[in-house]
Image 1: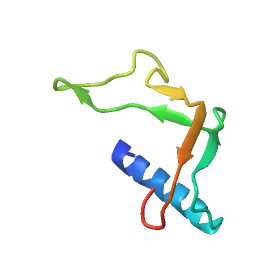
Image 2 (image 1 turned 45 degrees about the vertical axis):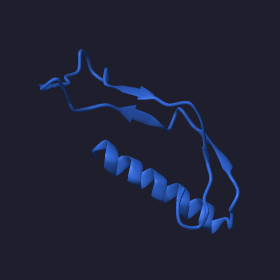
Image 3 (image 1 turned 135 degrees about the horizontal axis):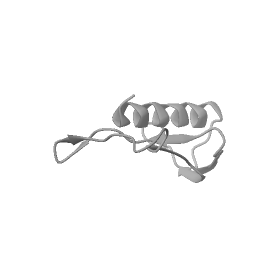
Length: 74
């Protein structure tokens, strides 16, 4: 999945969650590092990124995301 598609899917998911909860104020979501990961791909200066070892382009994510929705945007 390309990063733009992943970001759109993430925004849509959070927007639906906020709408379903009837929330119009900012909410903080904690990221579970055992279930969340980030993988990079693409090219740099015309050269494709390649793994130096299995999983070297993937990492877990930890922290929180603060989202606010106003009914039409996040």
